[in-house]
Length: 113
Image 1 (cartoon, rainbow, N blue to C red):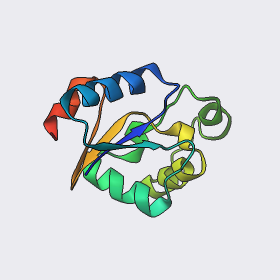
Image 2 (image 1 turned 120 degrees about the horizontal axis):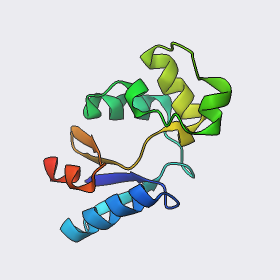
Image 3 (image 1 turned 60 degrees about the vertical axis):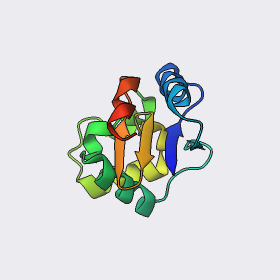
Image 4 (image 1 turned 90 degrees about the horizontal axis):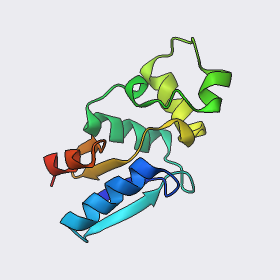
């Protein structure tokens, strides 16, 4: 099953969803702001992404500026921050089986289809 972790208010996330829709209709949309991922789910997802959590932090978010700017957090601490504040997570992320990609640009999705 393909999943897209999506924020409908984000232009880049909508572009990723549109691109994925042009390739297949067999996927699940996860609005991760309405349904935040648990720490275990985030840990699993980041293993599939093969990225450090710090690489997927939205540094322009106010919550980052207020609580995290200038802090040197471990990967686990970043994952806990993302679980508590899902707005910090870059999007969209597309997951299929044991792989996942950060879908910016949207064509990156082709790597796992």
